[in-house]
Length: 300
Ligand code: PSU
Ligand code: MN
Image (cartoon, rainbow, N blue to C red; front, side, top):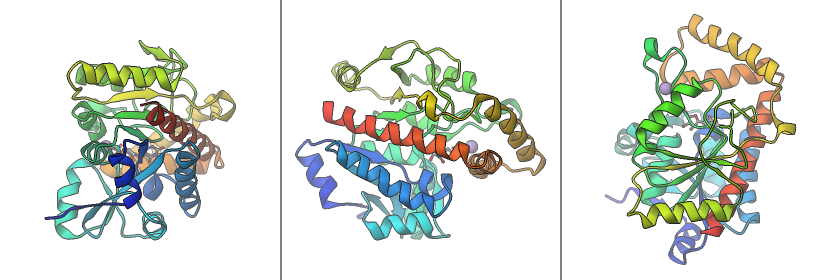
């Protein structure tokens, strides 16, 4: 069964050991509003190319995994209503039934690592939700990152989560964390979550050294998070963030939203109630992450 299609551009770059950056598609299909999502998806691919690397946006279309999308395929991910949200565990039923879907961090990291891609960029990871003791909602991103050797450049984990609990889980799971230019774990929309990180690096070359050291140790089984904060000038106003987030969490509970719908609901609510300011901070974070990921891929 031939399940995966790779664009010639990505295949040739990987074969020639040229830099490739994996990009996820859930942020496009379910994280950003239309039609801005398509423009951002195209912009992100352009940012990777401008750094001399090849973008590999990953998604499932008509029951096949795609590593690298053409313009028309990107259009479908951004605009079609039947594009589902696919975590790692959803891949097999999606392939078997011929479904189409955008891949989350868990599904994208899994597919990218198996395709031989070493660097992946996104906005913010999933993690342990607040009220976890009641809902048991912990993103599958964490478990997959525990078992997938790939560097993930992100602005930390989404600030709608329980950040300290998520950091504890990442420690238990053996997922490495480097603060990029900071000793504080980023807060997604915010430059800092206030939580400390143990290791700080300052250049793509330093990240590449860490990746090489992990590989020299005998092949890491887990991911390395490169935690890259959004610039202070681009962050969401922290007071506004805290106020609107409280409202978002209350509304989510009140409406009984659970499971895969939680994260898209919270992101959308924040966007509406901040008049789009959270969206700009989200996009600024992703842009910075994608650029840095391309530089790290080049340094490797
Ligand atoms: N980063 C963003 N926006 C997003 C996501 C990441 O800036 O929408 C997506 C990722 O695909 C991540 C998912 O894996 O949100 C987490 O969803 P959940 O909490 O349901 O696992
Ligand atoms: Mn969840």
